[in-house]
View 1 (cartoon, one colour):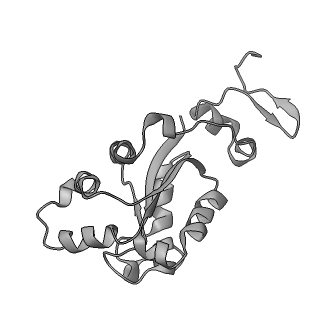
View 2 (view 1 turned 90 degrees about the vertical axis):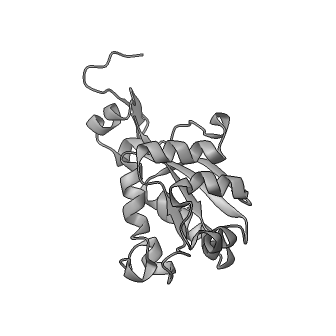
Length: 177
């Protein structure tokens, strides 16, 4: 199956008008948006999201920063989506991030770092559930899937049959539906 991951476009990106550029990078890569919303994060949600950091001295400042503006939450889907998104985002400290990454291009801080991205399948699922109801995660077909992935990769993602440039494309070992 295609993997889902969770991203937050943080306040520093919002005030600088970077949300569209960031989302475009993910779409240009071939990741599919299956969930999208803008909201002002509640403290309780931040405590749940960053429960592993409770008690750290910087957390109050960080929570204040995360509540300065509404943020954009995105659920992305694609093969190896978590790993791909993490690589596209770059390392946590923007000053140490490769200039070709989102943080390397747009950020200067170690904490106020442009974007949050889930780091594992379990965390992506947990984080999505904090902000999205199941009915807010959508399933739909993207015609370009068939030209972005090999037949074997499409089978791995559970895609049974596709149409390529108007003609049926049969996958090996699959009967006509």
